[in-house]
Length: 158
Image 1 (tube, rainbow, N blue to C red):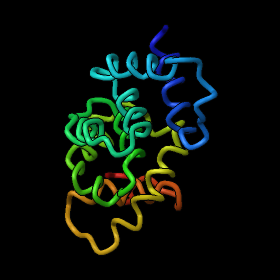
Image 2: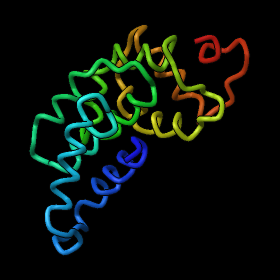
Image 3: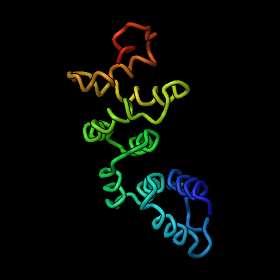
Image 4: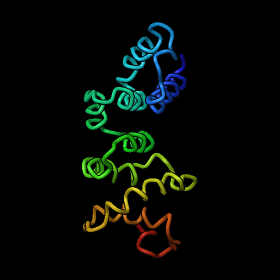
């Protein structure tokens, strides 16, 4: 099975977990598929995320997501969206987040307005009451969906 198909099916199962019934699978079909996903998940953040959602209550997959050093913005944003407590995840991943949304960004800002909006809508409440230079990038990103950031302004420069 191609990697993209394995990811798609695993994530579909994870996102519809509450709707799944035993009679939707033949024999050990589900268990065999999950075994295949588990063996491939060691090097794949998307499969790890699917297992995290599928096997609620199993700390191994959550721990793998918490401990990973993310190299790609899209992988990190996917993982960040899995954590139920955004505030805790933000505090834990702030250094990686600064890198992956700043100089180490692998996703362009142009053409990804919905991604920035999703991130900003979760981040705005988190930034209230926080000060410091390490928050400046996040504040600038939060300006993008709600205002015109013109050349020469502080958010534009950041």
